[in-house]
Length: 521
Ligand code: ADP
Ligand code: ZN
Image (cartoon, rainbow, N blue to C red):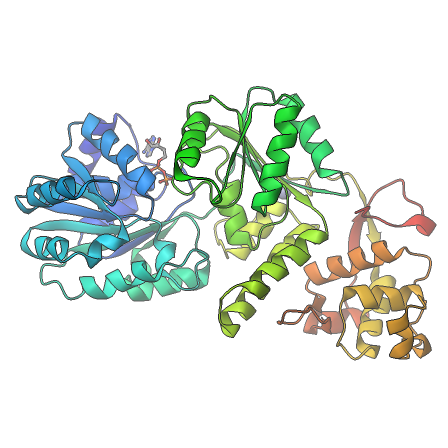
């Protein structure tokens, strides 16, 4: 059957060879094994279910939360002469009924549906009656409550499916999944270890950059001036920021549209299609934008402020360079971003457990902003991607031309100060104590009596806070789990205190000892 699959690749798509992971995933499905394919964006996941769908007898059901992409996929298949359709809420009741009727007669080889379709009894009774070739969950991370985009309706489909008598082979496909999410999906759709095809998440064509201590608007102006005709997305954390920034850029004469959930559906549709058709070059958007937008020539994605977690960041940044050409991913960081994200989690309707989980994910995002390791490597480590071990050589940390400075002594001072303060306070107050501030809170807790009080008084408070953040990113301090980070020592930090492990940090070559404020934020 794999021979037939190969000939379909040629015949229908005109491709000469499979991309990494495709053949393996297809083979598993053709051998009737439930399969999970984890491949980066643009890796070619669609073929992994389309070719088995062509090879196996019956109708393939593709479940996707992305209504806007269904039509594109169906149009593409139809253009190859393949019988495909979609059924979702964008159709009139009559159209939906007609398509279900055609489906019952086995007219389609592919049917794309949104998760809600499984609430419809006529749909359910139809799939029970017909020959099914396979069921594919696109964006399968939405099944998992550990995923950043969990959809309960998605998860409940799996239970419904197990009750249908003619259940065919099941596939899950995703580009963003932590090990936890992968485990969860495997359990749910009953995929064995052997049938997980994980090509890793690395996107070789993306370069990541962290910008701190710059005026964000100035940076963007300069950036856009250098790229007059390139398409890009600027993500803001709030609608208000999107409004202001779009207004600002339009006034400066840039071709910039905006997109957020506060706009009407028509307005959003218009902007989206203008962007996809290159009528506007830059789109300023909240995270409401992107899911289901198929634009391959996005050259840059700028984050105006830090998002809530690495999953969202990588998914949003990953909208750059889907065509395989270079993509630039810039994060403009300022300390304020952290407060905003904490506030958003705090105000949300999530339960306590979930909030704790979100604070922890947020901390990994904060650490990304402070780490000195390769940014791409940091992200791949976060997803525990086993396929990637080398620094990328093109992120802002890889390219940083600093000097490695031994900061072991200073780190020991910070760590012992944290210990003496009872491991109950955050970076701000710790920096004040180290600097020797006579802040009221310092005096109130009698921290001016500690031996570490004022021990690093030749640093600025900001510099010290940044240094503490760096130590946190290095795993030498743990920020705790709750709403307010309270610094605690870690097993790693004990080795530093004992002098068994040095602490090295990149600093700008020109800075003299007295002025180290290595991170002007
Ligand atoms: P994903 O869903 O993983 O983001 P797609 O399935 O949309 O990726 O595929 C991305 C692009 O790669 C599409 O334009 C597709 O036609 C192309 N593609 C997929 N498989 C191959 C292949 N084996 N050879 C060449 N191009 C491919
Ligand atoms: Zn790098």
